[in-house]
Length: 376
Ligand SMILES: Cc1cc2nc3c(=O)[nH]c(=O)nc-3n(C[C@H](O)[C@H](O)[C@H](O)COP(=O)(O)OP(=O)(O)OC[C@H]3O[C@@H](n4cnc5c(N)ncnc54)[C@H](O)[C@@H]3O)c2cc1C
Ligand code: SF4
Ligand code: SF4
Image (tube, rainbow, N blue to C red; front, side, top):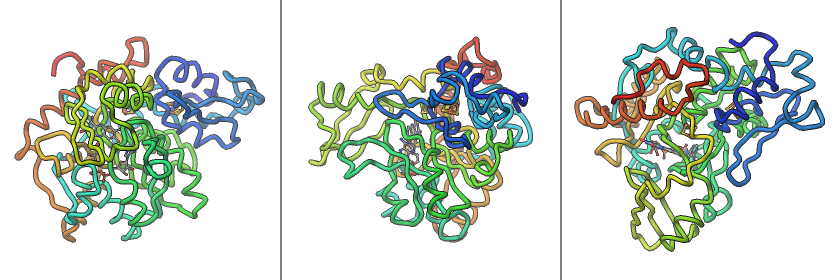
């Protein structure tokens, strides 16, 4: 936990202006005085301080003792070992390159409609539906597409029932700060909330809890992580997909990344775009992110491996294991061993986890670089 007095001016200097900020929105969500806001226009995805209350780089309430934004930030101070200790009761060993885990499985929804709606095996969707139906959660913070979906603008949202979960299924490769839907969930009466998000967001509940960031932390009861190497700026639609490949965003119906950018259009055609061509649109907030495998989630899910209609799933906590066991026993999901059935995917997980670790700056707090970053 950071020393008592650290507040927005420290967060601004250490995280926001240093390039470490991922735009997760946790500091904004936790601020009790509403003096932090969030810029999601263009490629910004950054918090900012309302200038009237201490300037952009300082905070009047912080000077009076409020430290909540630094307590919520999963890039401030020694965030990684703090979150490890809170979730797992210990720090990771050097060999635990994709974080602390109990098992790695391939899982998918038993309902073929959910597999169809989902990005991979629909596991995230079936999990949320299960947790809602079995009174484990009241709501989930997810990502939706704005309006009729034709702009492909990803926006944070709340799912409170099966229809809303299904509507939010699938992956968007631009940023959606899902924690920022917290206020919307609370307004609708939710007390027990699941968070779905990439590693930068999946560390939020653990770090908030480790640093005792109040009732926001206590309301997060389930965290589902999404494996993630990087996201892209919205400009990738006009400047790459449309300008170079003639793919208008309103004609795109699904996207995936499987070593190559896969883009499906309304006419049923699959277009493949080399990933390297997309790199120049990498979102700035991803440039220093060390967390490929969403290492502080209860369950981390991804699409790596040989089986496109299964979700590659890392079971991290007892809560995650119990949920998987209960759904399996009830016939809601199918499961197989990733170690037995797709060892190449495990090797890729290890490799991609190490690759992301190289991005953490040498001049920042050094915990994320304890895992050897060079060889796979
Ligand atoms: C931006 C992004 C990058 C990813 N990169 C990788 C990768 O490099 N390697 C890998 O193996 N897997 C990656 N994944 C994970 C993979 O695409 C699937 O999300 C995961 O396998 C779960 O599949 P599913 O069918 O079980 O989920 P589904 O049932 O389809 O549910 C997906 C959930 O993700 C949420 N979601 C969708 N887009 C976003 C977004 N932009 N921000 C936050 N939440 C979102 C949805 O709201 C939904 O709750 C990435 C996912 C995203 C969103
Ligand atoms: S990483 Fe998240 S919590 Fe930290 S400053 Fe950026 S938006 Fe705020
Ligand atoms: S690489 Fe993924 S997990 Fe890391 S900051 Fe970017 S979106 Fe977040």
